[in-house]
Length: 320
Length: 244
Image 1 (tube, each protein chain N blue to C red):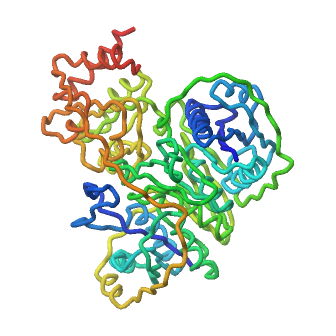
Image 2 (cartoon, chains in turn purple, green; image 1 turned 90 degrees about the vertical axis):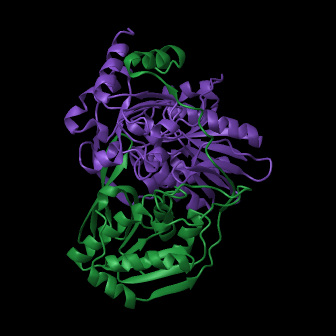
Image 3 (cartoon, rainbow over the protein chains, first blue to last red; image 1 turned 30 degrees about the horizontal axis):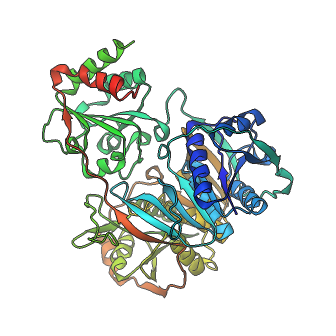
């Protein structure tokens, strides 16, 4: 028995969400009364892996080499299933990132595991193996009982608190025992530069139709830049092309749970609320006091965005 | 070219979700059902393949007879055949196993599905089918071009996009950029009436079961700040909440 945690890297680096994931996996191993083993795939410096000992990870398997240099769902799922066999793991935990969402199911099917995606709580192992996840795009939660002997869990970003522990990491390379199947080749990668990806932004400033036009987004971007936030928008705004689809948060867009969500000129239709309601602190700025968003808000300002937002910008500037 | 589109039936996006008194089930009384919005983008891509490359489109759904209306809407948009696996689905794994067992010998060139259903948000059926049918799978796909047996696809990655090439057959899960949903026309609606839905018994079992549901905690009342003192919001977020 063991819990295997897949520690995804981004160009050889780990992120805060890696630490959240390790803390979660470590607590899961404790709940199950078993040991925690990490798995790193791709080319990562040992020193980066060793630094993760501070979050409760003491043993890490590595799979390296050209075949594993970049993510491919089938190849990586093969590598994880080899590590599952090697470690005797019966619970496998990974982040609910685009790569995790892509390879988690492939892994589950290949090792005949139960799977839950988008988990937000530790498994309750007192009677079965129950994991809480959001359903109906944040309009509710479900406790899912995973009934197969093996279980795959993908954990949402920003759903579990990082806890510092102590300890060192021993590394074992198992690359030679992995036979990498592959069926795709990557021809191009394009990344936004200088912007915080919305899916991992801890602070988000979002705006809607109340801004009247794409030319008015300057103040939203300025406020976001000043506090280190990502920018988002409502569906009507991305539908008319004022902002890219990648910024659309809501039931049919991206679902986020940042520590802070500031909504400017968004009325708060039920589909929008579904995508953002699990944000820790919600601030709403809207000139309509009847806007439904206020009932989901922690803080509200009834006022004109074009007067309020510049005041907020000035207030942030005067902090330093 | 044979194209399979996996569709599910979900509550309309405006639905207020409530649970039964014992939290064991969802209250579906009076709820209007629609095709899962992401599946409409998958169907739109299938229609493009039909128009440009003469693809034949088969719709597959796992559900009870209530799902027939969803399959018929796909017919009205232009799908050719429909299969319904006759059971209320319990999990994405069960749906994928059921679909895989029905289509494994059918040699579909392209299998399309939405990136996730908006009810259980599993987002796993496409990738599960890839593994079960041992074919290439790409999820969160925003673009797909087929040239002979070469398929070029773009998928979302953290903070960007990636372009991949694979050989047919492939299974792809759609984001909205993959295709603009089609509206049924009168000819489609007329033709849909005469198309038959093949109903198949389910043999797949689920890997998991929802034990109970929970409604989100209700929020405390909103703390209002006067617009003339808007800067107070920044003070609270900075000094009290220490968010930045």
